[in-house]
Length: 369
Image (cartoon, rainbow, N blue to C red; front, side, top):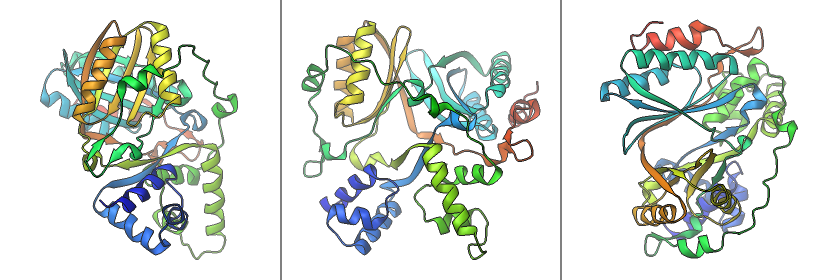
């Protein structure tokens, strides 16, 4: 990839839904050239799509994260099928390492549906599919977790390597920790939704980088019908302001020598954990990562090349009392958009009945309640 195309990818990452004409000015090329390059980058799957990260609580949904230890490969496949059938699956990925061979899951669901999910896990355990269920703190900024986006300017295309000094980075971590700003209470207030709102959220949760006309067509609406374009434009603006926390560019990191995604579960002193989370939140860490605080320490995952994985593990070994390493199989991972059919247009609420949230997903893998 030439340097100019790389700059365009940098610009896209900083402004994922900006028009090509805006990105073109930042890179110093013409708008047609920027559009052509973006098309070629997507065709070559350097980047796959742009997803909207949602403020789940604002639309009446909670995030629940789990690691399931599975008893066989066949059991793993069944659980993945269960995820495909469950109306509120948000993410899944195979994980392995140490004593754990299993799967990490996230569900975006109404709180009333949570008991059904826990019952499904219990049934899987009784049927011998899983041996252990571990719930994790929710991985979302509104719950206090922290994320870092990859800094592509740390990638040197001339030597095809990432430039980052781990010792220098950690030595710069502040000794005195400032309290993290609290999420404004308004950001957790429910906003009213109708069926069309939810269908639009479904569209932008899977591919937000589209023109309004394209979204209208995906919704099955007539773009030439009077008032339709104005209505969708107005709803998109409102939802972007009230529901979307951020936009994320899904980049195929194999183009940048990034193949590994370790998940480190560490026991550490609270001041070390707070220092690490704060430093990740405020410094220029070059790799995509997420960290969540747990009672005994932290869970830190990062997507990075082999050479830097060694540096990451060395740092954790130095600052933590003890740690466990899991590897996430990103090639077998799956991100799910919001499913509009889970919203009941009559009650204007999310379905949480037993048949929908428990019986049907279990039936897909041959289990009964």
